[in-house]
View 1 (cartoon, helix red, strand yellow):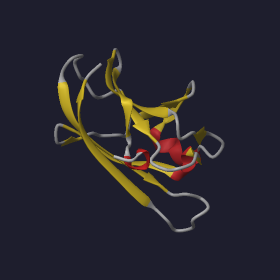
View 2: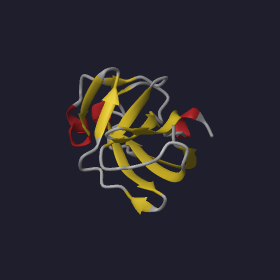
View 3: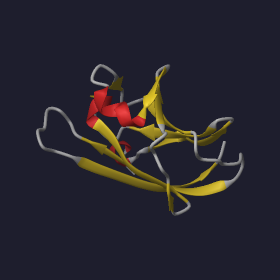
Length: 126
């Protein structure tokens, strides 16, 4: 899989005291502002995850996923992972889960383009 096709980060899925944390990668060849990125969907073990309470964590910052479109001054660099913080998801360290994540990008310099990037992987929880 090419780096621009991968959306699940190497850090994978992690159990946290407040829920779960999923590493995401930017599926594009150059850095983009977060405002041009959207999480198109997430399912774990075939069950759609409600993302209404999800947060995005990146470079020491954290904001609600619903406010991603407002992050015009926060840039996601292609070599970095961002994290989807899922307070309503409970996973156990060492367990395995089938994770399907879709990340869409809308590059500002290609008007009208929306690239949909799905990836499915079996992850062992950290």
